[in-house]
Figure 1 (cartoon, helix red, strand yellow):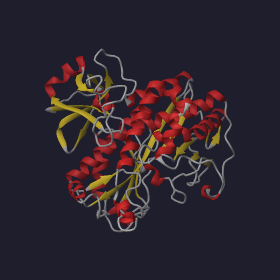
Figure 2 (tube, rainbow, N blue to C red):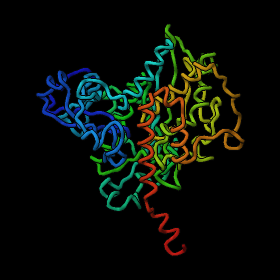
Figure 3 (cartoon, rainbow, N blue to C red):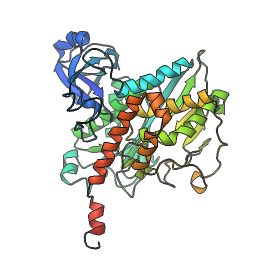
Figure 4 (tube, rainbow, N blue to C red):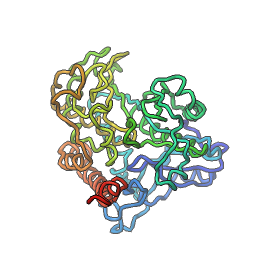
Length: 438
């Protein structure tokens, strides 16, 4: 991402990440750049209350019919400039979301994460985060998938490519285009690999500070979808698009540094005292914050025993059945394996920091690490369904304190709207199961 103005671009797009992690905004003539930088861009505050279908809910506290869906203001962040090979004449900018009077929306997801980063700084700490994102790629186009009710999709390749250089290589023209678009926007790719599902791939983004990583994370997903659309393909970041195939994770790697710039979690895989308390907080409070790592009904189809996704709350060293891997290197880092590829990174990262900071503040002690399979023992579990996750989150004292009561209530209300939409749905599975037999 570059700090440049629009340059030769004829259009600018000012966009804000919504509560799902999509980019919402408007395209303007590039000649309006100075005006928008000075005064911001008026924008209806729908983006605070949209569901996953991008339709606004009208009865949430922050905005709705009772407020008249007021205009807010998007204030562009010049350093976030990015470009798309699919729209070469447009310069895109992320923005902070403000009310018309210039005060920030605490409910905007960038603000939710920024609050936790500020709390981290109060402890004399900085963080570095990195995203590992898995996705499925199909030869079926988005339009064809929609017309066919997302059934009978054709995977990009008919064999899974789990670390298979040959089979993963068949998708290289597409994956190389993604990496090139990342590089053009200053986003470093750490690695690309085939994954365990048929047509599933993973790209790892190089670490940076949490807010910039969340920005890069949402841009990466935008790039993948835009490039798939251009090529008549489809890509999905659903946590579990197929009952019979592997789920798609959104694993988060994180490390902390102290005021001297030294690793704060520990050295080369060994935990410091601060690292132990942060780990203990992450273990203790993740069940009540799971909603921010697994936001949809489908998210919980991925969190199954024996699936390489964590079902139990535990930690270990290099053990992919554990929720948290404690790994070495230049300094100790954690791999937090709970989030799916469908998570909103601003909210997931905020939940990680809130849980870890609570562990530091309370001086918590982690349980012993596990050895062997986490699926074969009696351990605390994460919620198994969206309804359970909402109930735990709604009752979370930590969520209300860390995110503010208004934001806590807002996120809870949004999740209940998604749950209620699911409760009304009559699915193909229900018809096949009950039409003749009930």
